[in-house]
Image: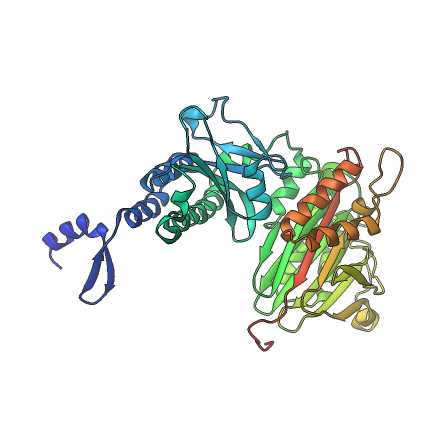
Length: 442
């Protein structure tokens, strides 16, 4: 290719899609808009995303595109405004439990809203699309179309294009979050304590799902949490997860738990067994805190092909198996000492410390810390294990997605204690869906 060819290919060729040797097709305006969005996104800062997404929506024939991101506690949807509109008061947060946008977020379904005689929007329709990163709910994307019928015209072409836009928007929001504080700040509705800052920096995405397994977590109080944490990793044939509860409160507890999580990840990524992982965590905590502090924990490994579950408890509460709408088993095993107290992890002494359970497709594992079951109402009533199980089962039975079930359980927990938890509270739900592809465990 000569210089002239190189120059010409940098211009008009952007409107041509390659189909193979000797074949090409001219892109239509919507495809060119996607092309342009992807090209510009590479050098787009987080604070430029609102304008970029709005321009793309206009290229699709829509108006007033605006992304709303959920706050940390998933109570409200906060408008993600460009800097030049950040102080406009007519863009307000939307309640997750009280708005149509919130319904799209809860149910992961597109919702439409007739704007009626609203000035400037007479006869138009507002469309709300859930915004996801994988299966983690980030918020919603709102756009205005001329009327609801426009969504279904031409075999629903506009609906498909908007779903693509929402998918791209979710990926871009997550990708750009790491390069600045714009998105992090806007998702906070209160000042975060230093201990909580440490904990949130450790957390993986709190929702994950594939064909074999789902993981969803909940952690409160969001802005003051210190000693509780959760972690997981899903790899070929194996999902590994853990819940930790560090003693004490405040910054010292956060330091303890951050070391515990780091040691757990270090061992897990080195391919250690459950027993060796527990020994590694215990050794790290004991070395730094010299027996003055400890953390309880539950370590689990689920073979996502066979449904075989193994777990080890370091002084932690037992997990439960939920099946067909009820708790069928408390998984008991002889616990070892909490991490940091110098437990003896010699193989002959710890063989009985690992429990084994065969799950059935659809089974759920429920892990939690004592801050959940021991949360007290102003009248002194414990939240309790029965209430926890009942809320999980009822919401899932109502057809709610697991992330929405978790949100409602956490909200009920906060309401039970009048919004003021006296201890950190963490919940993890792991569901094995079975082996739909008939894979063999490696």
